[in-house]
Length: 92
Image (tube, rainbow, N blue to C red; front, side, top):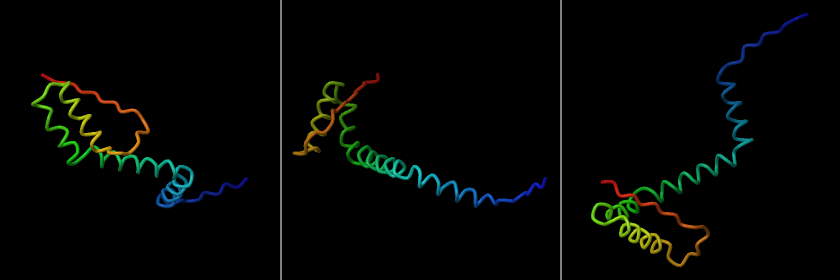
């Protein structure tokens, strides 16, 4: 009985693993990147700053109403494909 040992470099294993993941789960990875980019675009920058400016001055109800108005203004004439959920909490 002969046993052959083969020394496989780590870089080869990593390349093969990455290739396998891209082939088998590439579309999911692409979807995750697109969703992350969209969320980052929507939830950062001037939109959140514009919405958050009401936080300290208004009650929770008024802040929710202003935020909803801003979202509807941003939506414009586009049709709504899903529900809109908003949770507002006032911390004292």
